[in-house]
Length: 268
Ligand SMILES: [Zn+2]
Image (cartoon, rainbow, N blue to C red; front, side, top):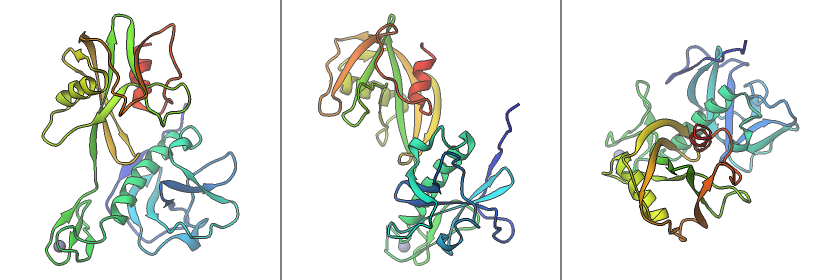
């Protein structure tokens, strides 16, 4: 039986810092981890000299407090430690640890970028009773940024619509996706994105599931729909190519960690 690693989010830690706290330090979007194959989240003891006095408490993972912070890119790392982009660490870090690291990254990034009030420019401070920073001068509150995006599997008979972005690895295609506009419903965003990126009309989008995606701070809302009318015309300003694929002739698909892959695996 697999060991279950329970994570409980929390705003502030109970008790003093401990040597076996898990401390997630980020340099840009890269997490500091030990070199080698057995990648685990670092303990406070292991990175003691690097941990800033102010960290953001993330919660408790399998009995260990999780703290996070951004550190300066010029910080010298001790021997045996490197910083690695979070996304490719999927599959190398245990699943629960990778998910907590994604959450920690978003909190550390929010904290780092909201030290001053967006209204009056004065310093902000963290609140103890909710996940927010409050301005000491005007009481304006800033919450962690969270951007809803839709991602959709569009099918036509036994074909699926996939697009390719220029920043994808070679030969990889994925489901279409895009951010939800202010004032727009998720379903309307699905129809708009498909119309914009592929030039076709679809049936009413059906709910599939969601996924927090820390790159950089998205909440992916998954839908499925069927082609209704129109020929595919790729929007070449956003994508290199969009086309229908059959199960027998599929390109390289997105990695397993993504909801894009879950959408496609459910169809395959
Ligand atoms: Zn203010």
